[in-house]
Amino acid sequence: MKLVIYTDGASRGNPGPASYGFTVLGRNGKSLYEEGKYIGVTTNNVAEYTGVLEALKYVKEKYGRHRLEVELYADSKLVAEQLSGRFKVKALHLKPIIEKIKILSLELGGVMYVHVLRSKNTVADRLANLALDSPK
Image (cartoon, rainbow, N blue to C red; front, side, top):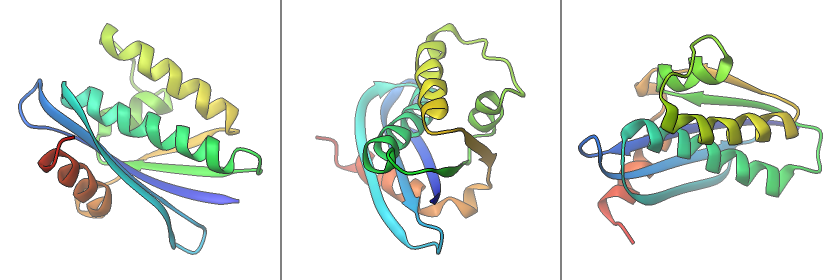
């Protein structure tokens, strides 16, 4: 089963009020699930990585019994490059969340991380901003 995930994080101020959004698509491009959530005051990088983490947690819970091929697209070049192993993780506060993401990635059989232009990530961006505009 092939799944395509688009993720985004948002923070107004750095740190500031923050949220994430993600969408999961099936092989045919049909939307299977969308989520956006306010996460409190944090940095943009934490919001970006939280979006990835929550997306992978959802996929594992919902589809973890299937043989999966997962592609995850993020408009944060830092996220895509660090999770792919091409950039080093220097920020100590990000290491615990990245470690959780790596464990989930292995449990899912691997995830391909791809940087995508913001203009190609409109659904996840919209979900993150809607969540930021209506914190709960």
